[in-house]
Image 1: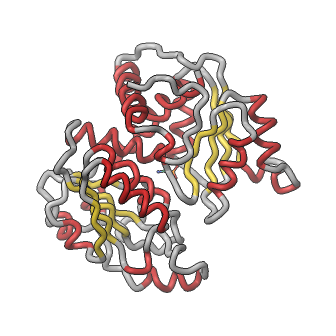
Image 2: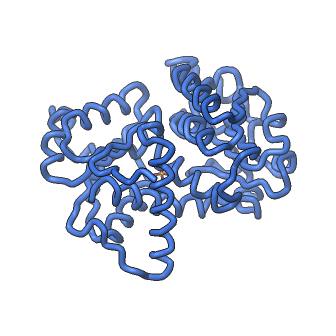
Length: 326
Ligand code: CP
């Protein structure tokens, strides 16, 4: 077990080694048990986390803020629009100054080709840990929660288990590709055979694909890419289907929206879920476009674990904050 995580950033999924992720999960399970028993666990008494949002959030804000309070500290909600960033505060200034006020800086910035660079620039100038609450490339805390949920439902030995990471139709907007990218990076390290399914225009970033293939080789797991949602679902143990944008294919938003409209049949419905194993779990980070990405019958049905998944955000985040900010 690697326990010395004090002062570390978590920006990309591979920033923590596999052993360090295992440590974070061990702590998360312990903190989940402590909360269930109402056992005090004020590991971050008097510590304050800056929570900077450049994009909306329900779960991320709620879980980080509640988590900091449960750890005896405070999460300060800072909406970028209400700061002086538009009037000139640079990422260097945010890192330097907030690094002196706060004990950690968490940032959500999902703008394509901007968010990840911004978070790294803040981290370069910060004396305290910087935590990625989702950028254009990664959503590491979502995936830690997903991993915790898969372990709870399927056990710790995930070898020979098939996880489908599938694109799904959604007409609302071009969603970030951070969730599927983080999934294909992290899950092979824990033994899951990953099948990535998407229409041809929804490729993920080539460098992330290379890293995912490398992780699969290193941990001797399967990693296949298909363009058929039905074929991907066949005999799956874990079904994770959500929408993302065609940003790698085109930078033209109107063209991206036109492409999305071609694939309205990519929905997780009861027929498709039946192609997976009978005890397959259905996962989604939420918010979902109901009856567009997934039917009510599936997301509210017996295979769905979406609320446990959302709950686990709080436990894994508390674990990483306690390990890095104490
Ligand atoms: N899953 C997730 O990150 O949810 P929010 O966008 O509501 O934070």
